[in-house]
Image 1 (spheres, rainbow, N blue to C red):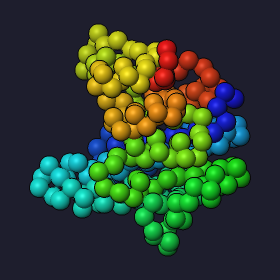
Image 2 (image 1 turned 180 degrees about the horizontal axis):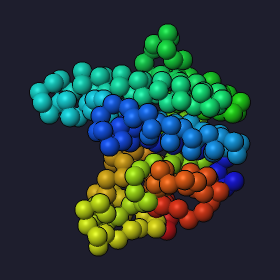
Image 3 (image 1 turned 135 degrees about the vertical axis):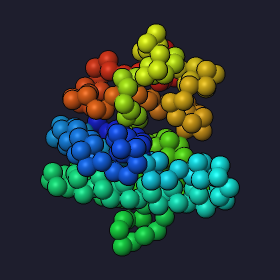
Length: 237
């Protein structure tokens, strides 16, 4: 393997599938089956899941809700998604730990960096819930922060498309795919891969990001093995 410890960033919207909200059992099983295959290779896996399929903090704030309150609601939404993913993985005999940035001992362990690393060393899949525990920070930033804390080799940004394009490939047939981008290019071109805080944190700590289509069979293992899948965001091209 080229990468032996990775952090996978899943959007909450991905879990909703075509229904547009909530959790699709079919999509959940598809995602967990890909993670199970990767786990079988011996790769150490951490996961950050968004909550947009249930509640988005920014969206709530646009309707007049207090931003901090809306963000905390979004953090609770991520916990629901993390527990659903944990259940799906453990039904496939993969040991997991959900670690929450907000204390809720009845359903998740508190996030402690050294404990998270130890779980990974024991080949448990670690799922980080409740964002950073602070409002005004997205789960993209959580992914960048946790990846650096656990000294992951790579952030794998799972999407429905096979990389980063100059425009939406779902709407424009002439969209051009990038094989590689620098952090500066992403920031300067305002490409919505991850928010600017997350990109800056990755840039400052040389944390590479690969954006890829997780819903194509075998892609997740191909990324870990170093195959040219998706778009690589890195410091130098």
